[in-house]
Image (cartoon, rainbow, N blue to C red):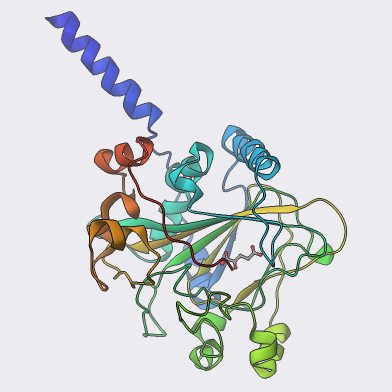
Length: 322
Ligand SMILES: O=C(O)CCC(=O)C(=O)O
């Protein structure tokens, strides 16, 4: 009897550990990091992922790159929602400090959890055109907008590099600090990301032709960070950003993860499996869709993690890529 209970306890601990239910928590952000993020809409965290987690991500990404052709008009490789099938991406999205820091930047507390919404694994190679200045559209960010320009809980995108980046050589993520908090944010945003399911190509990356004026303004604000593998930029959902093309060298690998408060409302972009398969309606809470947008902070939920690891989630109906 005792042996049986002990065996079950050990089994539970082993399963829990293998699912990564216990997350490491390092120190809190300083008040100046939080206030700088809230002013600029961007914060660089050095060494967000290191050691084995980083090594596995680099190896796993290189394997994926060699195995499959996922070229798009702008990137030499693009894979969306990789956390659902790849352990090494899921480990970062769930178990790194990315969720905790995102929750802290948005001022969430333990009664208002954080959920993982959408990730993107991209490779930018020499000569790729990348995506011009933009704020993510409703394909990448299928949630209703927060129209309050002063809101702090609008959503965070964690952009992690797996390869070294030097600002002067390009290849990284260009950001326009403070653009998420400006009064002209919506003026410039309305030229792009107009959500239209029938327009398969989308116009999210085309600000340079759709509004040369906004494009010039953002170029004048452009900042590029020097970054090491595992470093991350935490950027506000509404910060203008763009991939910085480059001309020489190895592909630049990056992984971005979008997080939202659990009470955000789903926007029906006609591609989300959560809506098709769980029969949710436009405007449902993210938390209602369970494992499709799993809770990652303050802790993950065993039932959701099991659905993911057992491969029970249906695929999204991707109509287009950035
Ligand atoms: O990595 C890039 O080049 C662009 C990434 C991006 O636009 C995003 O993470 O939303």
